[in-house]
Length: 239
Image 1 (tube, rainbow, N blue to C red):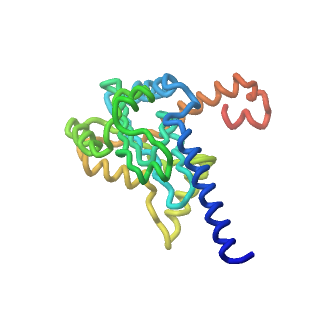
Image 2: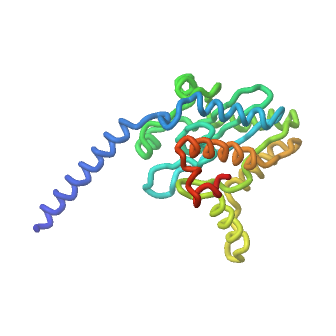
């Protein structure tokens, strides 16, 4: 095949791929349809009850340094249904409300991930979260919490994304810490240190046991409704 024809075919294929990607992104939902906003609100309400007068602070996953589509970490998605890179969440047990912190929408991010939720009332109405504000205000919010010396609950375990289970996450953390040529800290460990630096008067507690119990109960109920708890090899994992 002549080189000129090969180049034309290549350009045509690239154009078709870009068009298909654009159509897929144009039809992308701004908020998940896996559950209704009321379900996520109920989950956050349980966290509010568990933290009492304190707050829960959770960081979402980041974008990938490759061409794979963004995937939210399990705990953040469980509480919000939000699929936006670098989102943050504060669940206030005393005020009985949640605040979602989202990056400002950019053309570059829209090209990469498709249309994304942006701070504002439209996002509040769509997600059912009481306040959806710009991520740049997160620092001030943490400082205010710290000034009141309120207890902060945060995930200590590294995030789980996709099909990764918590036991594999813990195993990876241990292997990384024990490796003399590695020793990197998880994003959660770094995030916790930064929050503690901004709010030194606040005690920081582990949120993982609270969320693990909630998620376990959710799956036990779901599996019971499906009749799967009667499967001998499956039941021990949930009971």
